[in-house]
Amino acid sequence: MKAMQLDHAIRNRRAVREFLPEPVTTAAIKRLIDSAVQAPSAVNKQPWMFTVIRNRPLLNLISASSKKYLIDSGDAPHDFHTILSDPDFHILYHAPALIVISTVRDDAWSKEDAALAAQNLMLTAYADGLGTCWIGFAERWLQTRDGQKAIEVPEYYRPVAPIIVGHPKGAAAEVPRNMPTIHWIG
Image 1 (tube, rainbow, N blue to C red):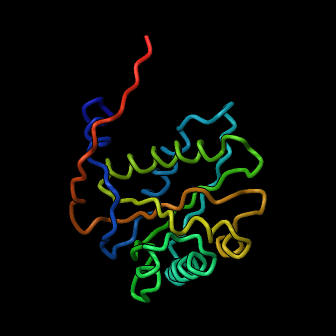
Image 2 (image 1 turned 90 degrees about the vertical axis):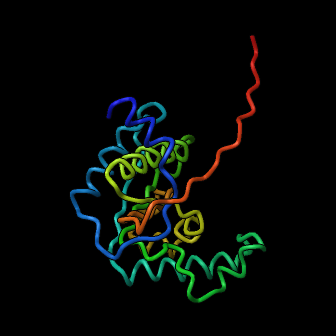
């Protein structure tokens, strides 16, 4: 990817929450995962595992179970209870695919490693005309025994980054960025 193309992807990639019903090809998903594994990882451990879910009933189960878990456990901020209680709200926005990046549980930097891999995946998806969104609402339930069992993740892994992928219905809205706080020393 040329520098200008990379800069464009960094500045224009946004969370996508509206998708066309068409599936994402296996080749496209393999390309996203190939980009993800090019990310740096602490001590080059590469502690990740990728679970690709395109099964509609399982995607619906993840949505319903995640909503219920967040409400029942009290993990959801109070201002999200209304939307999570709405039976029509689908946590995964009816995306045709979910890629869950899981990492080895006992690795001190595995969450950071997963975030780096996720960023590569999402930037590549944008460059390929696909939309993505990291679904934080799904993380907690996927980390439960029932969640891990549902997506067949071995217990020595921890699901960290659930990312929906699909063909966007339209362009994502521009989101203004705040000026950064920069503290210079020297």
